[in-house]
Image (cartoon, rainbow, N blue to C red; front, side, top):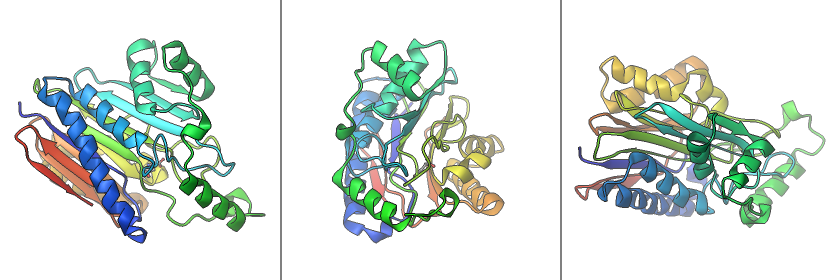
Length: 303
Ligand code: ASP
């Protein structure tokens, strides 16, 4: 099997800051190349997607790991999901505040716990016991996000939670899907959630079938966009369902974005690979930085 990996840096209103979009595409290229190193060496799709997403989490440009959006109380709460298409096993984590690389924490939950999904402080202590110390909040908060938060706080002072307004609440979430030499598929998604969200809010990203899905018999998908809408159409599993109906990977991504739009008026983006390595991506936002690389040296990147 010819290994291939795709990464995305979030579907959103990237048009308002073009320089940042170019940088985001460049970091997506680095992340995809990092994943490809594992795939070329015969490593697993799981290793590849975890490695790629760590690169994106470490970059302050994206809403994942360092650079995550702050919630309406000025705190970071991150969510992540990793899925193993060979066994349908998955690990997920939500509402964690002090973990540098939530995607690796999700993988530890998958491999070292009796469970699949841990949240909040319980998740943080489980990860600490398993050898990853909690980081400082300052390692995650960037000046740019702090300034955005202060602006939003002033704008929304005296507003009840249901009346709070946020321009461009989504974008910059990250994800990766890969196919390895043995034909195994994997998916990974990581996010700080939506900008100025309510404390405790969890979106689609860590939910199996919503923020991501992988099944060696079908394909692997990572999603991004308005979590509240993406969850309602179980978007990543929907892409796989379209593939089962005979759609190509690209057709399945397009059909799922149409479903999102028509059924719940949602905005978002998707990347996908099918069991034969055919790739697809789609979004109905202004942009979604992405990069696709395969072991034959082909690289495509854009937004
Ligand atoms: N889907 C993420 C969430 O709702 C946000 C995003 O993709 O930008 O938490």
